[in-house]
Length: 58
Image 1 (cartoon, rainbow, N blue to C red):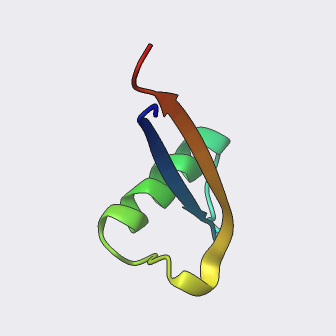
Image 2: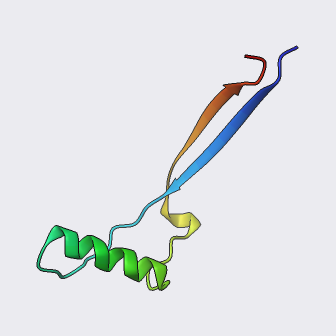
Image 3: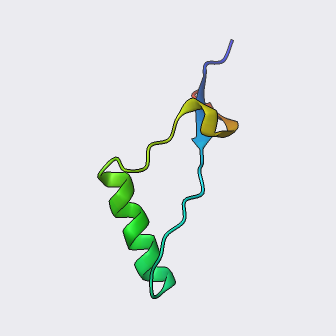
């Protein structure tokens, strides 16, 4: 028998409106809001699940 490691990755996503002068500024503002927990992702924001497999015997 071979041993495998399976990585399970769940992706959450939400679209937020940001007012800014440029895309870069909007991205920075969104990141700051996320870090400050002004934007929080919940299980209802589920987008997809991926399974990645790693062969441990290689």
